[in-house]
Length: 97
Image (cartoon, rainbow, N blue to C red; front, top):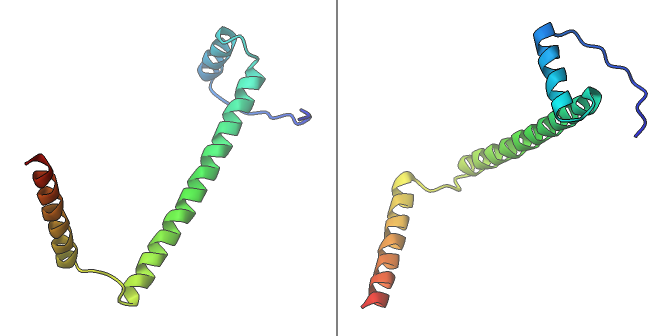
């Protein structure tokens, strides 16, 4: 990838000095570290957008199911899983006997 763009930014002298010192300790040019930070930021933002879209779609699906009556009440879910727990306990208890 060609490196033709110049990026100028203002920051506190203490931050710049600390950054330059850490870049030197890592034996890497500051520009390389900044590029890495930019790429990581871009990827993190992309992942956040993808997750937000996934979550929005999941919520929209759930709302549509509720609106169409395709849901179970809390009592129904509790009863269903109580039966599953009982069956599992009986199965595990029967295997040990």
